[in-house]
Image (cartoon, rainbow, N blue to C red; front, side):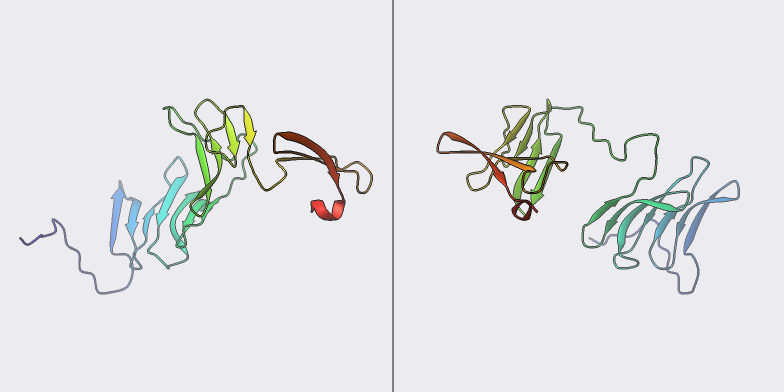
Length: 173
């Protein structure tokens, strides 16, 4: 079976390949480098889908020409916010799945479950905040206004016993 495109544009020149206009105003452009650009409308929102390697971004969201969110060709995501009116990032979960999961490679290191329980080192926190580790101090509280070598209180549980200790400034950095 041969698949045929509904529309085929074979452009061999310079400049934009396709432009879509609304009442004479450019709304979308397919540039000759492969980028798909939505021109800012009256709302001021625009996005740019880049061909891999063009300028390092696969997806870029702009607000009046200023980059606000990018995913580069290595998968790194950047969120740039300059608004003083609200949060830079809001994550909303309307269903029953986890709200947020952060991974280091294939290992989940932080989980925010539906309902708000937060787990560090555990994927199933039972309490509001649960920190789990068999090899590290589970919690450190630092008072940066305290005197030298008196700033850092460490809390850990090993073998069923709770330990509270302090740490020098050099060790805590």
